Length: 427
Image 1 (tube, rainbow, N blue to C red):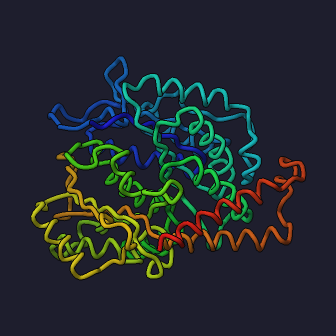
Image 2 (image 1 turned 120 degrees about the horizontal axis):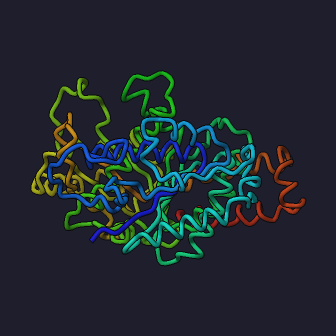
Image 3 (image 1 turned 90 degrees about the vertical axis):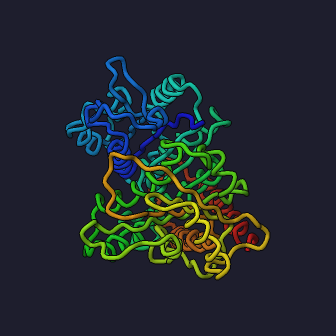
């Protein structure tokens, strides 16, 4: 049976993403912005995975919202969702943020005891906690630095629970000049502390927004909307249980056969609006679209890698017979290249959908895949790091916090290189 999951949203990006995710699943469960239900109709679901019922019977998310500056959290607290979250789970230290520095975020100890107490309290409210979702960006200061500190604490205190991170990354033209520093230091924690990491690349998301919706310049809302669609489909089997992969553990055993090679790519189709749909979608069409490089939410050299594992999640008006036929055609035609040592690399699942949400498409699909080409993404980040670090530029905040000892950088770099090598050997 599905078990509870606690979501931690850290930093500006993490809180904006977490907010969109909960809006998305609230619409599927019939939960209004004040936590009440929109209908008395019986829905065979498991709201308790991501929500608990307060004394007044309102549904409250198992969510903890953390930032080092108040702007984003204040916008959530003054929106129509102001009464939705537990106000005690909003944590805003009384400083001016992390200044886009991993070091400033990591060494912010002002609220760590309070964060730990709130996590402990949420865990105690669970009957059978399965794990944690972690939403953040690895490029700025709070999501990367403070996020790393929180991941270490969770991993140490709750080692038997799964920690899954939804990490937004940037490798090309980052807005934050020290993004390569922050990324390398955070990747180390994503490698050592998490059991799975779903990678989202800003450039890929912007391209998808442009091609799918004709938007010249993608907004944060556009990109978070795409990510939340993927997260919703990923969690559908937990919230609307069926017989296959109705727990995080069962899914991760398939997708992440290696301890540290646990970085996943994702895609979702179709994303087009209802009035743009002009053709009938088939299961094999969905499977083909899901592996097209332009639909993957991380920009990698996909054709130079192989799939270690993949799982296609189907939703909508599609039968298991059609899915199995599509799977047979997919494998017979060898439409994707898999590593030779995993004979059970591909799985397909038909997930139930909410009867409350009108669907403009006959079916939709979501891909979660572990592909060796992710190493090229990390190589690009490592290259950008090396170019800056060799010149010793933009190191002021790190020098202050590290006391001129840059061993943290060197160790993080070596750990990232080890994962790159592990993915290379998997080929």
